[in-house]
Length: 238
Image (cartoon, rainbow, N blue to C red; front, side, top):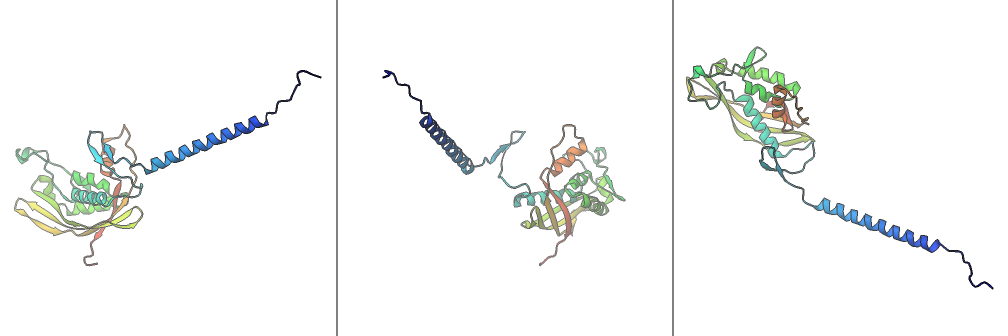
């Protein structure tokens, strides 16, 4: 008879307990991740963004091909005003004699010229529409604009709510007057300018650090992420 009996160690219960512990920990980790993702999804998205110049603005998350009605309306108003308000006299120079001012000599567009501001604003137009439309504006621009004796102003009376045509495309109606001023008629001669303007969303690539002045100008005009690709006469009463 042996005083000490040698027994084989049964490891099965230990392995079973270990597996239960590992499974429990795994389930706990998954639950923690699930609730963390739920909290992130339900948390409020930050709406206050600080710009590089320190100004803070409110923003809201939207898809890349979507734009708010306010953004579209503002873009159309600013673009059409820039295209059709012609003035060769530099701003804030009222106290200087006209003959001493450096007037805008204009930019050639076909057989006639447009003001530099009109040319710059033209980058808000799609490439296939930009050249023919700027040439039409050159035909409308009075030559006396470039000697400072004639100016124009686009007076926008109404901009409709943007109508969505399809994803990333809208149409907006504009009722406006193009008013021409000159030395002999300072009250101005109004010309009806009622149009339907077609707008679409675009991607604006980041500007390179080595960008030229021309590239910087185009980027500044197009950074709204919108472009006008067609303008046609407004059909009143439709």
